[in-house]
Image (cartoon, rainbow, N blue to C red; front, side):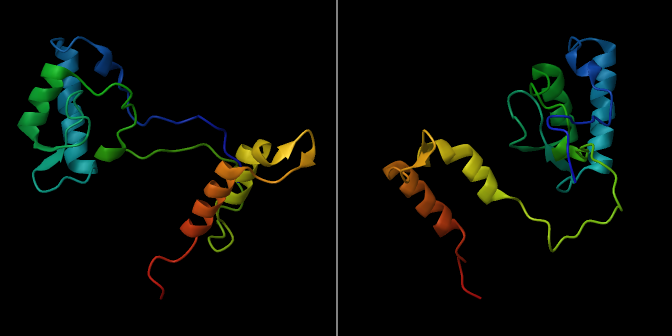
Length: 151
C-alpha cells in the first residue's frame, strides 16, 4: 500500500471558521459543529472536548460553554480535521485487493531509524560505528522493544 504524503481529505466545509466570530454564518457553523460533535463524536455524557483557542481540546465542557468559548475565543488554529469530535482522517491510497494482511503489516521502524540516523554511523562511505549519543539512542530503542510486564 502506498500513500501520498501530507494529503488529508476534509469531510466538512470549514471555511466559516475563518469568518469573524460575530458573523451570522460563523455562528451557524458553530451550531453545525456542535450538532456534528454531539452526534458523530464521542461525547462524555453531556460534554465534549472544547476546541476553542484557549481550551485547545484539553477540557471537557457542556454544549453551551463550548458555544460561548467558540464565539468568544474562536477555534483552535490548525484544528482542521475534527478527529476529537467524530471526523475521520482519510488518506488516499492505491486500491489493491481491498484486504490488508494485518499479520504481515507492521511499521518499518528499523528502516525509518536507519534512514534518519545513518549519517551518525557512516562517514564518507566507511562505517566507523555509532558515536556515544547514537549508542544511547540504540539502547533506548532496544529497551523499548522489551515487554513491560512479561506474559
